[in-house]
Image (cartoon, rainbow, N blue to C red; front, side, top):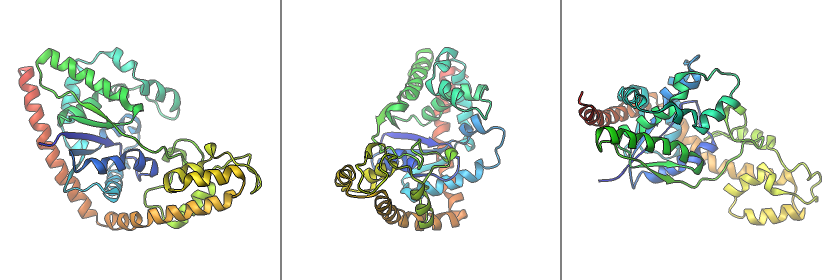
Length: 324
């Protein structure tokens, strides 16, 4: 039997190149080797967006369309909606009973987002306890593997600690997941910050030519390279970061920039062309997928039914271990 993989994303709308190179590209590659469960984490969306839930459902369909556009195949992978599998909430409640508060207060993301997110009140039980819900998500499917970047290892270790604590109390019931470290290209936003919809600096998956042109023109370049023949400093340039991803001859471009033999306008023009070639088939596929709402509904419905079956099997074992 294939080992199982669980991963997911919060449904916040259209996905961008940061999502693609940071996660989706790896997800696609995992499909042939593993039994993959990919989840729209709409309960997790409530931890920060509880005051306005009006877009969460539509965002799930937008996100599923992007997953399929990127190459996730419903015939190979289970695409499902977290809130339609009630066992997530049930196991979350059980695990919350045995998770020490100290573990949650030490979570680096909790402390970081309390500091950074000022426009929302995050002092709620759901936000503090989201690592426990994350653990329930993973453990419900007895996931052997969770694909993560190095910055997410601390989150997965919390799940592993909760698993060991549960098994110590009730027997060896839950599968302790292992990290599968994934390498991914860092895609900066047009303003050099992390690419994020909330920053308004994203290049979306399947962006059309007009959008690509506008966003590449907005990209930050080397402020010290004023004239075409000035020596450039590509390491701090957003446009060069895109060349490293899309241009197989980026090392030659780096030398040209440093030597002052190419200007920023020409450099941006080439990236526009490369992005256009990369995006065109994705844009065409996405347009076809997003038009067929019935298809997307069927994919999510069938995937959710498969997810419920796996989750129900796990909860039967959990309740037996609890002697309920």
